[in-house]
Length: 462
Image 1 (tube, rainbow, N blue to C red):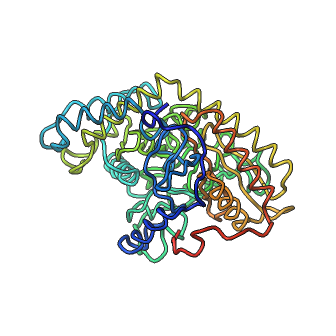
Image 2: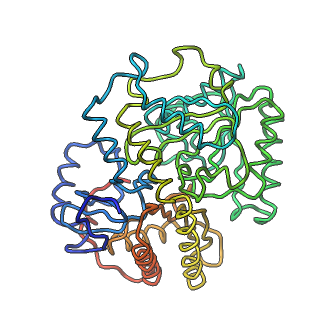
Image 3: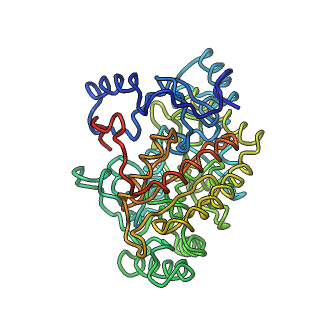
């Protein structure tokens, strides 16, 4: 297990959460860091690995967040650490566009091997998921000589001006930051839990609605690309209705539209497959990756059909830090770790384990409207009992109780009413079980008066 020698894989609470040292560091943070940078749980991590985060007060917390799906292989996987140390000792940077190096090429070779489809592929590397999505749109426009971009309700694609335009949620992502990029068109998402005629009809009916909207409101011959998360992330871990993705992919192929799969959160074994599109048998034209690609270092990519990727003119793609050699070394180590430790299969086991336990909890608590997800990407949607009305207050209370008990969980969803769980794929089985027990206890305590937590009075904008 990663995390360095001597890092016990155990939950250990020495102080209330957050403890005095974290509170002191938080005061320093608030004095120097811009208020717009949010904090979910104000504990300051000193060491991490396997399934735990150890904070400044020596509390050891169970991690069900993975840095928002970034450290699937763990926070200090041996192959990642070794590769990074070796690369740093040789050189940290040259800029691939000036004097290239083998690591960038090796990562592109791995992306060609691992992404769906056996067609000829090319890749370009960048720093963040938003950069990858933005460049995918650039490439699609260059290839098609069209401008329109189709995106979906509940989507999240980033925080740059273009990717904010693609993102659906106002607060905190779009609010006060306009005007936004033009030629972006939003269409319905196949959201089974909230589909008016029920989940069984969701995929087919939603696809028909999307195709009708594109055809009548935009014009299919005006559309450069359709950008979709195969499982929506920030929007609420929405697994689209059966047949939705494949029908849209067929429609795009028939109409010369580039089908872009945003696999930034779903990629690299997270869902129990290398990429979430594989669950639906869909082969995208372009795939964007980041997060789990490089074991915690900033690296992203666009991978796709060679004829599409090569449509951009020489010099049209790139960036000073894109495909940094240290990040490339980390990516090669992360990919090796996934394969050598069988983490694709382990993500599937994590999903089976979590879904079974969480559905047992659902049977006891009508505030849980739905349990959903694939692999180690699992969510609970909370509602007012007896309705489908979103219950963001309950989600906040359960998350807060989990944090106090030493379990890191995240919330998401357009309505703020979804608890999302993204444990590292290397988390020990007993920690996964203990974390699920904490979630169960948090639901049992829902609605009871809670004692104030240290830190409740601290301004931690989210």
